[in-house]
Amino acid sequence: MERKQKLEMSNTPAPAPPLRFKERVEMLCTEMIDKGILFSEAMDQFERCLITEVMRRNNGCLIRTAAHLGIHRNTLSKRVCLLKIPKR
Image (tube, rainbow, N blue to C red; front, side, top):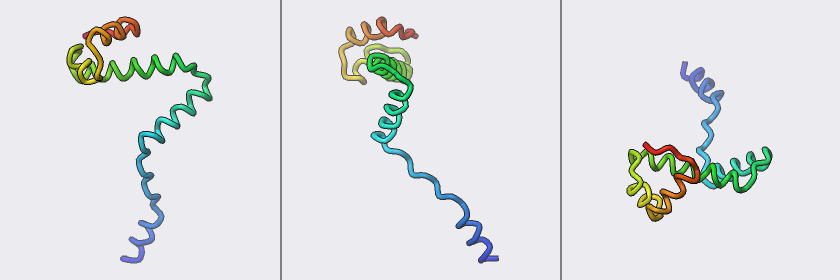
């Protein structure tokens, strides 16, 4: 019985270690290059995603979102309008 358990355990694939942030970004960059994404499109999408997520976590409060991002609230407000990010 003990021997059978050892065999079963050795056949199970070991879980892959989680990718580091740098590796995930490199994979994403490779994918974007392969798909022909322009630099400006990639930057806009990243900025839109980051701002949207931080706003969600701050319940749409621009002042707290700006503080979290380390930018002035007027700058954030302009970026929200430019990127057409819906306000709550």
